[in-house]
Amino acid sequence: MKTNKIIDIFFLFFIFTVFTGCDKEEDMFAKFPPEILYKRLEMGTGGESWQVSPDVKEITLESGITEWTVRARVSAPNGLNSIELLKVNSNNEKVLATYAEFTNNPNVYELNFVVSGVVSETVIRIKALDTIGNQTAKDFKIKVQ
Image (cartoon, rainbow, N blue to C red; front, side, top):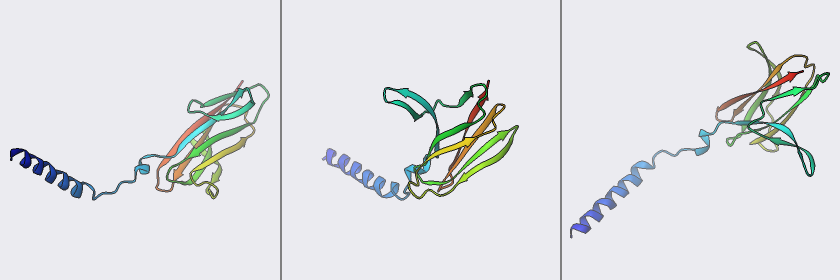
């Protein structure tokens, strides 16, 4: 008899929890901001290939080289709204390019942008904004010898 009361209490507690705990629906993807991963050139058995890596943050250009193609994979589980590519100099940001059309794949964009006229250390910043307002920014440094 006592066991039945305990089971009844747990059952009532379970029903109460189910009906009161499910009133707020949460989008699990809302917690994930856009991700920016720069690419590096890797040599493999099949030849050269560009691979994304969270470790890529800078490149040092050989003497006499004054341009570099910034390559990155920008993704957002909520869909991309816009991407800005900026050149950063002493706290000033100059917009180099803005991307806002993501018709083929609204969640992933493969960015390739040629930065020319690099004669001193240059910082490139990518800012990504998703469709619900989450924003991410990540810098890439181009050094010269």
